[in-house]
Length: 409
Ligand code: PLP
Image (cartoon, rainbow, N blue to C red):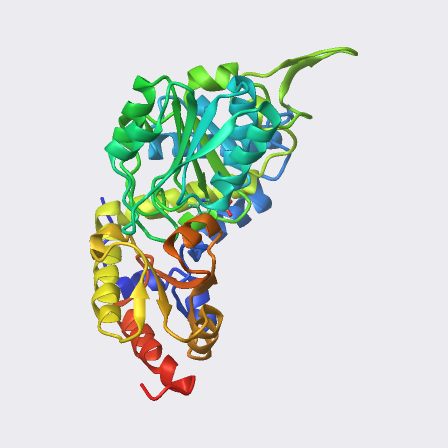
């Protein structure tokens, strides 16, 4: 049963909105945290704290159960076939590095190709470049148009018989555009390549079903979906995870170690070396409960409404140019823009004076920015707990910026 929708009631769950005067429109960078998540983290350390996955005493087993139940929850949330396909990492960046070094390092040979979309966050671009350098593989780019669109045809034209890995984000952190991961996975599989999807900007905002998408790997971060910082997820199909070598080695990822060798544990433990972030995992489980309690239907309804207002109103402001599509529904809560004659850092600083938080800069996607012909831009990104009044205040403040900078209009 979904919770009754009332945005003002929902906002009471977020302590930061009581402790600070802020219009928080930097949700793509990180989301705010409801007290249910904060309490779940505290609860772990208050009542379950022992090193999970190793101790034999009662408390350690309780800690392990908490951690494993979080894994089960993530498994259900993204509809993985088995909890063994869920690896806890620090964040999406670490998840993507894990796939690149472990899977990429295992399969890539000189001359093989890795096809990376040009709109990828640096976290889904630099690991592939590093592994290409090590293996002699080549990184090629899957281009998008000015709207941010990559069609199935584009992928079919770019993929070759040498392509082993295709890396594409489900939602761009700059343009907000959504890629058709299901269709892309089909094309990749027909060519014998695997598809690695970056779900950092999609998983917090829409239902994601890894079996339905038939994606080989999916990476995302807990902190962008109401969870704590320091916990992320890599989903991988069991058939791949079983064959992959570990990324990090050390404690608790082995069956046995001798003077000269080691037998590694089965996935997911093979990929979780050292003491795990069980408090973070407990927080992430609470975040999933929170999102499910509201329901993605309502979440998307509110986020789409706010995006529509943003796009409609921003269009009316002279000298503002939105990157990507003109259709609000293509933006998934993310509106990135330039303002003629004003550096994005100044835009952000002036908005900050009105207690409005947005992101300014290259958004860790410099190749995309270069392709769009801009050095930097300003990004407003909404989450379901934002209100129409907040978006209206942002628009009013944005309208004043050029005048504040000394322009006549
Ligand atoms: N991928 C995308 C699309 C992102 O937007 C981000 C963060 O902004 C990341 C990856 C990296 O996430 P994290 O910094 O949590 O590892």
